[in-house]
Length: 149
Image 1 (spheres, one colour):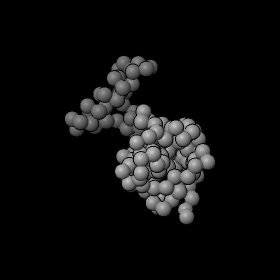
Image 2 (cartoon, rainbow, N blue to C red; image 1 turned 180 degrees about the vertical axis):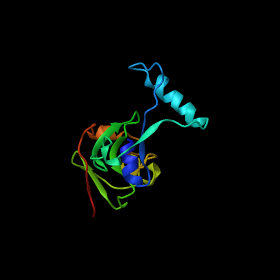
Image 3 (cartoon, rainbow, N blue to C red; image 1 turned 90 degrees about the horizontal axis):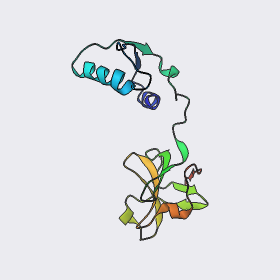
Image 4 (cartoon, one colour; image 1 turned 30 degrees about the horizontal axis):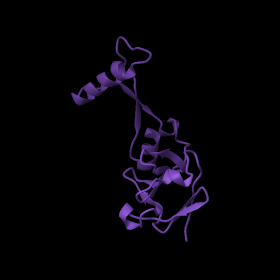
């Protein structure tokens, strides 16, 4: 995840924590490493680190967007891995042989109408006003295409 932040920011650099406690378990790094380091940072103590080359981070070769359904929430909405900001509101999302137009809110479309919108995480989400998009045959991992009219 940090590699995505670094790629998009261009102003962020990473550092590897080299400080280690006297006892570091193999499976409780949150308790043994990260909590003490967070406490050090919060109290203004210096934490031992070394710089990391941004290009060496895991995920720097990942695509900016994932053109697929990545999650279906408990409301039945299909969340994609596509950032909404770069896509104009005239863009058409196609999945499972169905096409979806943009709507700003659920109330912008009639009851039962499927559409796409920008969710709270800035991703494209497919929903149905007062319904469930998963009833449209959408499943996690399914490919998505975007077209401009």
